[in-house]
View 1: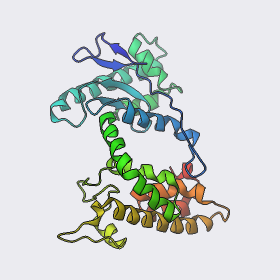
View 2 (view 1 turned 90 degrees about the horizontal axis):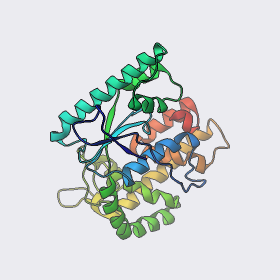
View 3 (view 1 turned 90 degrees about the vertical axis):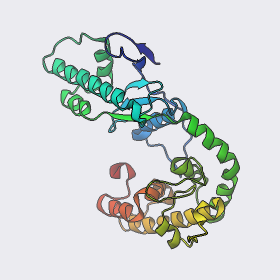
Length: 286
């Protein structure tokens, strides 16, 4: 539930404080479990993609993403013209958090509705944690409209991806990874050079057998790129399975699925090091 907050704090532009991240029903399976420790984070990102639009700014704690302080309509984070406003609101929230921490230290009454709400976001009532949070406030724009467009593209390219995954012996739920990578846009380019629906880097693409030259870039071909991504994920699974079974011979492919998916962005070597140092327990690695 969101209520318009008008008294004193957010007077310049109508905002929404007292915002709670919704709890969503999730469909999980052995290949893609839903660890209880991650569900609040997942709920936050579901809201980002379904509740708040690209013109909305969500001010929250980057270490505890579902700790949302305020939402502002029509004030997207990345817009240059919005920078002063976002900066000012971060300062205001930070000041409220610092005041709250002082009041807790002094065992003083919390004499503000907004501060009382903020306190509910910190169940342990630790003033040290609140001070840390006060100095690290992040702005995240919503993505509802972008996700709606991605769903339309998914209707076109989803069947191609599902067939490639099935033929490659990979879990069908991997079909949702391009939503995160590119919003299912086969023409997407990133600032660092990744391209296509699967956001494959040039060197990685060549290593996977994709053709990249002055006239051809197979990263932009949905089917060819999907085969390349499947090849990467299969090789990652083999590498990480070997590393994990050197620590625990009984580990299953299902238990390693989160590592394989994470390796798509973090890199296989990074995940292999994590498994060797910490073991094949994804929550401990995270």
